[in-house]
Image 1 (cartoon, rainbow, N blue to C red):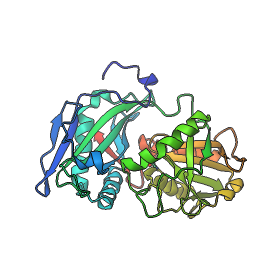
Image 2 (image 1 turned 180 degrees about the vertical axis):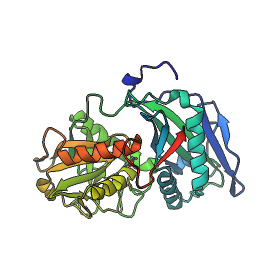
Image 3 (image 1 turned 30 degrees about the vertical axis):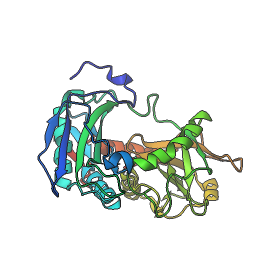
Length: 338
Ligand SMILES: Cc1ncc(COP(=O)(O)O)c(C=O)c1O
């Protein structure tokens, strides 16, 4: 183990020892290469630089109480990347290649996997880019798929707690028939301005409404939304949000815990009826919401200063599964290091 202050890691980039790379050339994927260089040598006309042929994923490896290191739903991240590839005309990374590279990069950097006690984790960032030169708007012929890892601190340093969010209507991160459902860099570029505005005004993150009608809850810049009422977990159905693997897991856990689950459009004014609300994603699992302000109408939707009991139960259960402490009956976790 590296000698780091594991308890005080931030969610930032910290170099580790190795990354893994695989090149797509002449219509096929090559051998996995192990690399210790943090830099890429890229052609200046590479399609990833000009035409946004760039996709990524985000997942974590957890050092567990039993000493093993586990990953969570890697196959689902592979499949989401494949969906993104189809969406922006890149060759699909096969699930076996994706999984082998995840396992390899985690094992190679095992000294960087934070201690169980710290609550920190090893963040895994797969990245796929078009590398060959084009000046016309066309897909590249050559691609690089790489994965790096970096240790990141626990999302909740002072314990599981609530944050305020804000609906910003002046910006859309994606359109109903656009790329919101894919994990491409352009969606994040589109969210930077509104995200900065939200932070300047003291909110944790910005919420987008559906771009067409500005009526329904879509998602945050980097997390899905859910609300709880009448023993029901309700989450938006929308073509412009990223299909969150955490949200999919929470829907299943909610069902396992005896809640009803509804995936449907959620009109903004329905927020008034939720007993609890949260943002969910790999980084935090659940970030409970204290209130959501609508800056244009001046309306505030409040859900309480403390995380609600159902959000807490969902959070504890999913984290328990990720850390191998609660039975993984859906086969979501994989032991990467025994
Ligand atoms: C836009 C967006 N929505 C939702 C999520 C949550 O997805 P997941 O649960 O797979 O991390 C993320 C993070 O990956 C995201 O970037």
